Image 1: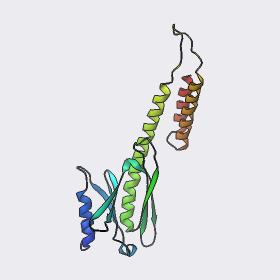
Image 2: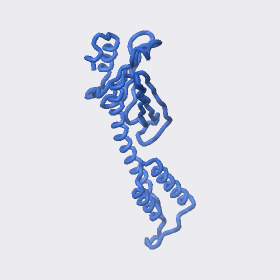
Image 3: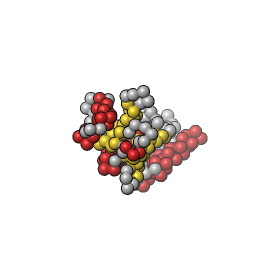
Image 4: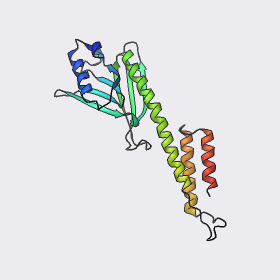
Length: 205
């Protein structure tokens, strides 16, 4: 990437700054530079997809660079719009503290990126999005299964027969069924997985 911007001193400095903030073992997999025409009122932006995050490098008002990082586990969606002159990249991400918890959503859009470079960044983002989407699906499924298996059913001292679940227990089961349906609607469960999980929840009564 440095070879592509030789002679563009500020961009070389931006990439050098980006390299300096990488964590041990972290590598830059793709990088895109904003075209000069789209940065008439501000310094050009450099974005990168590393092995651990998406990074937006912007020139600070008083010099230096201000990196904005989005961890791959927080990524919700990535979009690209390719025009005749440049590309626009939009990153939508979660603000939740846990990979299985979808918190508030935010977005970051960078316009005027060099097309081939933006497409390379987009491909890395897409691959990471799919990988973490599967991890969240597995995590939520495991948590739901764990809660389903924890349904308490009353029994006699001798262990024969089952008591009817309390109203609170019934409400808990309904909540779990609703969560399973929500996972199905979001595409995090297949139809077969949903039916199997639903049967497990109901059979635990």
